[in-house]
Amino acid sequence: MQNLRKTFAFLSAAAFLGGNAIHVQAQDGDEMPSPEIREHSTMPPESALPLQELQMFADVFNQIRQGYVEDIDDSTLFEYAVQGMLTGLDPHSVYLNKADYDDLQTTTEGEFSGLGIEIGKEGAYIKIVSPIDGSPAEEAGLQAGDIILKLDGTPVKGLTLNEAVDIMRGPTGSDLTLEIGRPGEPQPFDVTVTRDVIKVASVRSRLLAPGYGYLRIAQFQRNTGEDVANALARLQSDSALEGLVLDLRNNPGGVLGASVDVAGAFLDGGLVVYTEGRHRSAKERFEANSGDALGGAPIVVLINGGSASASEIVAGALQDRARGIVMGTRSFGKGSVQTVLPVSENRAVKLTTALYYTPEGRSIQAEGIVPDIVVERAKVTSIESTRRIKESDLAGRLDGGSDVLDTESESIAALQETDNQLYEALTMLRGVNLLAGRQKPAETLAAEAIDE
Image 1 (tube, helix red, strand yellow):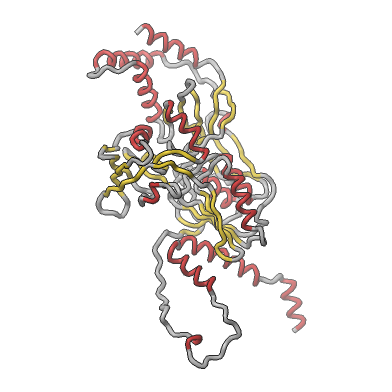
Image 2 (tube, rainbow, N blue to C red):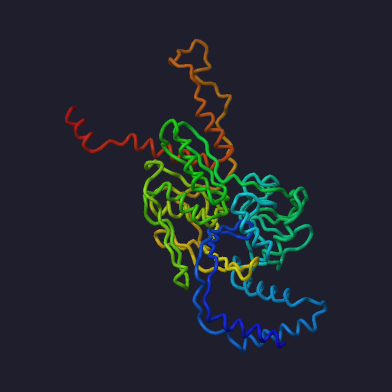
């Protein structure tokens, strides 16, 4: 008890002292933290720690040491106490033990071992924010919004995120069975996932049709901004794009700086996002560099319920700055900033310290980004009969002078059945450009009227 009181005396004194800490802007949950590491001073102290409450804590601590059915060492009890404090704050404030802290440093590099899911708390259960592209979780059929009820038969109700992640970890090649509750399904069902090394390709791109590009960002890693710039250069190697679909669906977020770089690729300077918190160090503004890589060509941003944090920053910035049309469904709503504060060489706490706001001052937290055009993911089947006879099928028809088949239309029609949201996005881009091409300035119309 004497040593315990000395510890509390030290903590009380520490409340008045400054110091240096590593500030990490983390936009995601436990599986996909997103640090941008830089030196910051710790937050200014408010007041001395309350001695009466500390005395009560010491008494409870001592009762557990003496009376709990199993012997637990003091170090473990202190860790439990810290975990409890942080868990009571919000779903994203957590204690990072050595393994968690190591993961924080490695996952942002784009390779780690596990199932490949971003998770968060949903009441007493664990919710899948999104599966990672190409991960074992995605291949097994797990979806954004799924609720994890059991892990290898162990109920997750009441578990912390860290405890759930510990169960999910395991040797590469080993299986984990998840009991899943899915909205719209009458009964829970089991999904078996084989653990593997997750190699996340941050950026993928291709042409959807001549002049129309597709850019998919799976998560925001440290080099995502550079990868996006390279992808745009490849897409425009032959000619400038007439439009771009920026796909942020099921993107759980990532490195803050990368989201600012990506938004900045399409914005000619100006505000991307800002943060507000209790302390001065939590109030920051992030602005884009000058220059628009697309030269003003229209953009459609695809989002859904698995789009969180850094992806919401990009979607919100392009929406507020009238630079892109946001399409899909409402995003996840992860708009809080976590600061990672080391408490020893290999342990830290991840504490929510601020909220994100879009350029127009909208809070992302628990609100998400509402699309300009709502398009639900659906299975679309064409009712147009492919067996219907056309003029080109008739014997003795007059040729129109061209034997070129409209293979482009056929490929776009196929896209409608495989990904209706992407199909609608491409249709929107083509429509915008068709309308712009047909509009004539008032001076031209007046001149034509005079000529007539």
